[in-house]
Image (tube, rainbow, N blue to C red; front, side):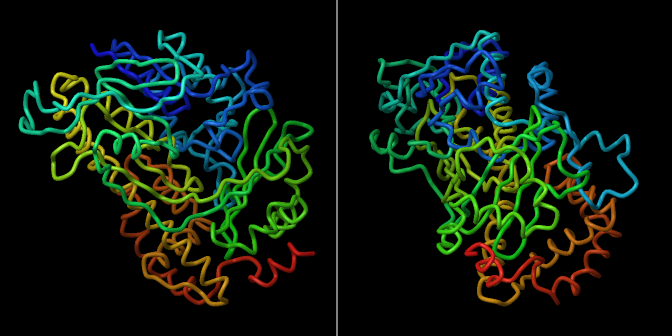
Length: 477
């Protein structure tokens, strides 16, 4: 059993800590934010200050795949979350394209609707109860290492001179570890830490452009949602809208624009213009009748895809250190894959540790890298493809003409069918939620043929919703 330091006590780090502690490892989680969660999960919304988790009060909904993995590998955690107020909901149920009601097999689309702070609250309590030591208020300043990463390596790269991480330096003193797990998220300072060790990496790829999110939370007067059916995500030309239920009668609305759309950014930061933009989506104005829980519009900008790799040509850049979840790869939040990918990534780390342990530092890093590539590489590429095409569609809409690309036309044709046919909806949502067997459903000959027949329909029209000039006029007014 190993001594493991996990950096970051957000949900990704806590999931990792729970999995590794269950295998008998001695796990310490280091969190720079000093305040522990309050005694009540609902109070956490207003009183838990977490500057290290900028998405804490933004629109949030885990994928159904996350709930499946959590119920299988973190038994009891989902039940504790529902006991604290999270709502078990079916991701198909609110969709307008679901005709004929839910089937028994549709339970695979179940997920938990809750504000992120409630999920963080419960996971913190669960980790502490499982014997995970959570130390708060100590910022990690860098990595401790020795320059003999290849010595003692049992299996791979015995000639490697990659530095071997032996712990971290924090503002409250050093911490030693057999393995350091970076779960500090999208803002991870890992590149600068590695440069301090003389490592030029990690190998990084990142999108040059991204999205900005403009979010507000509301609480309904009667605890019910404003409408019986609604799309969780709806995309018009220059704007997208997320309508997401949460806990204790709350829900969120999140508008999405290009990060370099300076006209919309100037307007959407103001509540009246933000509300006017929401009203551009059919039926969405009823969602504005709840009591606002946010102080103004919550903005998060520069959201794009980014991936880091700690090995190059099968040789590790560094040993004794792995990056998990958003510290490894960030995907745009509107497709909601971050939490499910993070838990799947943590499970890969657990399994590689079971097979190799920490006695083969280079083997641990390279095998984890291969597992990451094979298990999550395609999912990441799908996310980057979505980002690239959606930004191009927004650009084209702002310029007043439709966006055409064969892959995007087929994706839009599938979305069109999902609004009309429940079987197409199930296949489309299975892929979106990363469910097992989704590939076979999406490649079924009948669905492929139906998508092909629908492509000419989407090619002949602009995206739904108002024109660019109509959007700007509505917001400016």
